[in-house]
Length: 139
Image 1 (spheres, one colour):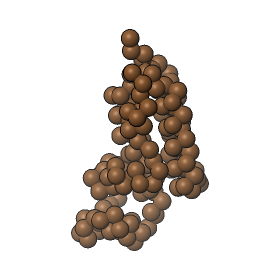
Image 2 (cartoon, one colour):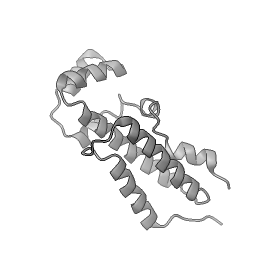
Image 3 (cartoon, rainbow, N blue to C red):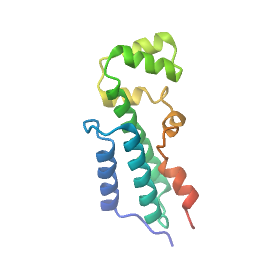
Image 4 (cartoon, rainbow, N blue to C red):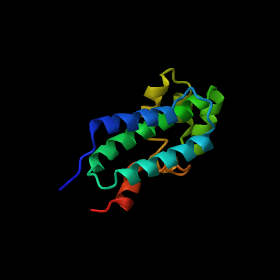
């Protein structure tokens, strides 16, 4: 018998992720990484018996996009955006094109999906919810 996660729990989880990845709070990246990791571990440990593989896949994608938006907002100037994109490994013309883009943070987070990959996001301690769930899953 599979246990399902209640929709209100999912809403609470997304609200907590919104608070952690809010672009307007002055939290440092290390504090944000620590709190996000604690949240992921606590939430997964609590609901580890539930069947939520597909749910976590979607929430992971959404959370990574929010994390990309946080970083994009922190790189305020065009020069900083260009330099950070080059450090990630983006080509000169592509980095210049993206740095000068006038799109909003949320839209740019989607565009950066190809450049600012999941491996790069996982390097600073942003644990993937799905990966941790698959390690802990007991069924």
